[in-house]
Amino acid sequence: MSSPSKRREMDVMKLMMSDYNVETINDGLNEFNVDFHGPKESLYEGGIWKIRVELPDAYPYKSPSIGFVNKIFHPNVDELSGSVCLDVINQSWSPMFDLLNVFEVFLPQLLLYPNPADPLNGDAASLMMKDREKYDKKVKEYCERYAKRENIMNYKAEEQSGEEDISEEESGSSDNDIAGHVDP
Image (cartoon, rainbow, N blue to C red; front, side, top):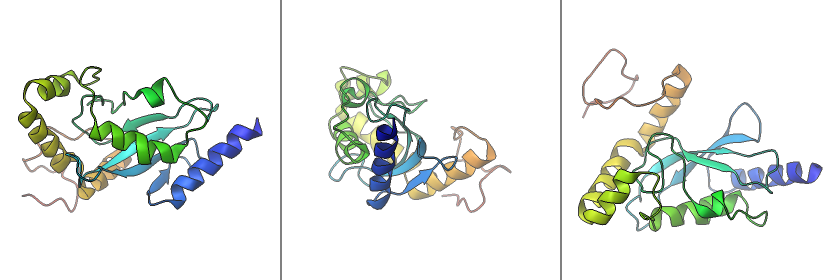
């Protein structure tokens, strides 16, 4: 069984040596976060998402588990859990794919070509089909609110302090504000 572990090491190292920022969790290669930039010429351009990757023991024969840590408005991403609905990862994964495929092909394709017919986020799918202009605006609002570099830093601080989610009423000031947070 050394082949899957060697392949895991090789794939994670290849990802680390690419342009992606990779942060291992618990000093292992089974769980890590990757900074993912929204694809150019898409509604998500300029956004940065922290993607949580968990590799099963049987990787590359079993697909990695992929999820968005910070919020994204997309028909095929569950807004609360960050789970991704992507056939190539969930159902048709092959050992021929590697982690670079996930970040250079699969996730960009997911963001460029959402599929509202197979939604994890029914609100996003419905809005996309009924009013594309409002959908586009909401995607950009989410990018602005949740996918800027400073928001990722805030998520890191919240993860370390044990908080799980950003409050819906962020505009008000409180004693719990993260140090360095600038009010607009």
